Picture 1 (cartoon, rainbow, N blue to C red):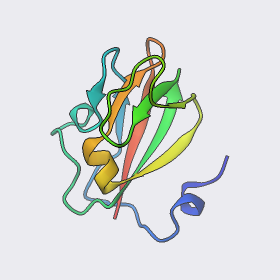
Picture 2: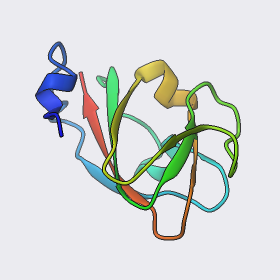
Picture 3: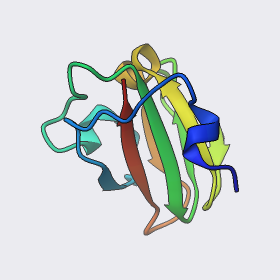
Picture 4: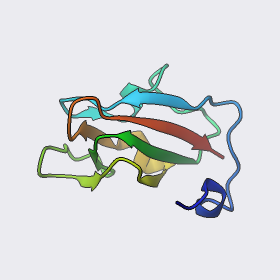
Amino acid sequence: MPTLSRLVPEYVPNTAATEQQVTFPAAAATLLSLLSGGALHADTNLVIIAVETAGMRICPTGGTPSTTLGVPYNAGQIFELSRKEADVAKVIRAAAGSTGQILQYK
């Protein structure tokens, strides 16, 4: 698995924003609603999502994901979103207990 530093060499961790573990919901919800405080830190420009358990789907353009719509990611996969995508993205779990880590970079 590639290291995060290889994925985002031009970005640095936003140390003002704590890493957060989230549980992906059964019904579509905004990515921001899963974060404590409901928002990204003001200095965040990039978000890394690491899917931990089960899978999930995401619509990074604000559409509503379902069991058949949205980009699917499986446990163990890591992907990135721009700040603009993260601000409107919606997610849904693929199976009960689907969790992930949200990391913010600036």
